[in-house]
Length: 110
Length: 116
Image (cartoon, rainbow over all chains, first blue to last red; front, side):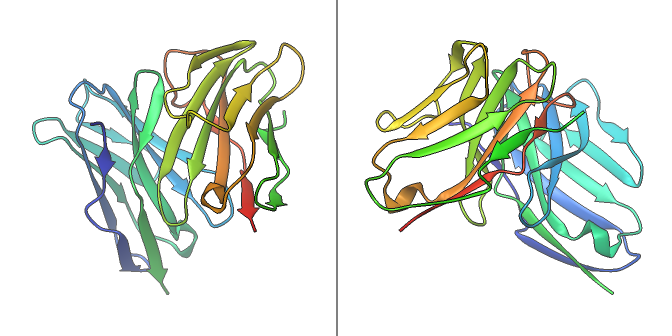
């Protein structure tokens, strides 16, 4: 079946360090991937996306890497800040709907 | 431009009652998606609707659950005869067109349903 999963359920980083959140997806036909951030009590917030014809895309302090060979996606956050503490989900767009992974909790220690 | 509005934010129902969750998409958005989230889990797709049409309901339970998006008014997710297992956060997202959900899709704050 279709599924998107995450390797690490919880990630603790020191403020100012870089964070890397990983994701494995199973549907090789998916051509569009998105990372979302979800703070407690709120809906998912779009962070960055990437299409399958790319292997890297950069935003402000965030970078998404896509390795189609091993069906792996990662989100890199530079200079992690306390406000980055949240649950991060990767999602793949498949047949006009998003398939979400289970999520990684990012905790930033001051 | 208001974002996606969901109400109520919190809903408590006794077993056997009906739950109605409302989602008003962003202005100009005619596509609505409903997702369910259990505690410490990802969002599970339920249904995709356009105005007056259900496009994909592959994630909807076969019984007790229904959704609509009328020509006028918000999208409604209806759960009949709720059971404790229906307790979850329900999110909707809207986008201006179909063909996929991405940068143009925005999520609401969700409705947290508790069945007692």
